Image 1 (cartoon, rainbow, N blue to C red):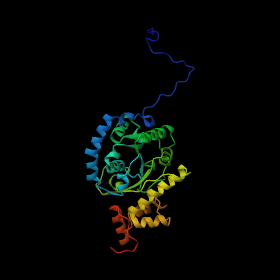
Image 2 (image 1 turned 45 degrees about the vertical axis):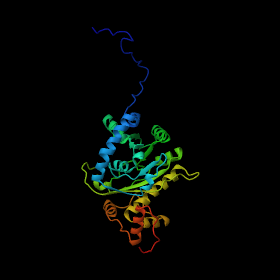
Image 3 (image 1 turned 180 degrees about the horizontal axis):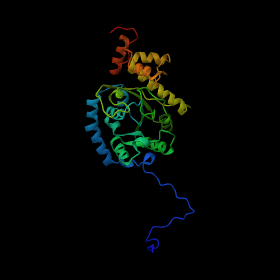
Image 4 (image 1 turned 90 degrees about the vertical axis):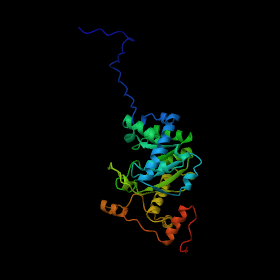
Length: 310
């Protein structure tokens, strides 16, 4: 004889068999809550970790050389920082190179299906990186709305428009999220190119290998009048590609390539893996004029005329 169930509300209510149940709301992935990570207790703890642990570790492990630092030092309003993506080290290196006033007011757009697929990973990502979940396989209104609201509230946004790390060191096509958010909010886009992280911690490897890195930064971009997100996204990718060209050659040569519209694509040659690997490991050496232009850029000085002697 079965035990008689207590009447409602002393027991759990029954669900009519003719009414379908709604799918349970997931708290992971794109729905992971992160607002707590932008409250002062979490911000204070994250600032301590970034300044006292992350920055010294980055200096020892990667020793980043920042070219065009003035573009970061003069961020006066909420901005969208975009960069190529080859390693998990890209995020802590870029954050550690930002001025403190910018670093502590920056959120990171992170893949919802990777960094927020488990509760512990979501908590760690939100606390350590101030990350927010971003749907990278399709357009998600929730992700876009959250990012736009944060920018309008005064936060900077770090985005990797490729949507994931490179598997061979070369870039991938840019998604248009950063361009869309810039047009919607009026926030400038700051192009960056980071070199060397794929040698320290490439995709698929868990051990790190110490080595030098370079972070190149260019002037902020804004969408032109009547420019749509697709064309603006192409300009953003071209700006990052020009920085990549500069990293492989020099400032002067990259400018000449840009003027002649011959800047190499971030995506590398359309050939076999061995050819792509060889092309990536054989950077062009700058000439005398190019080296002088590189040095002047590092000092914040204009480049000398081509062919001049120093």
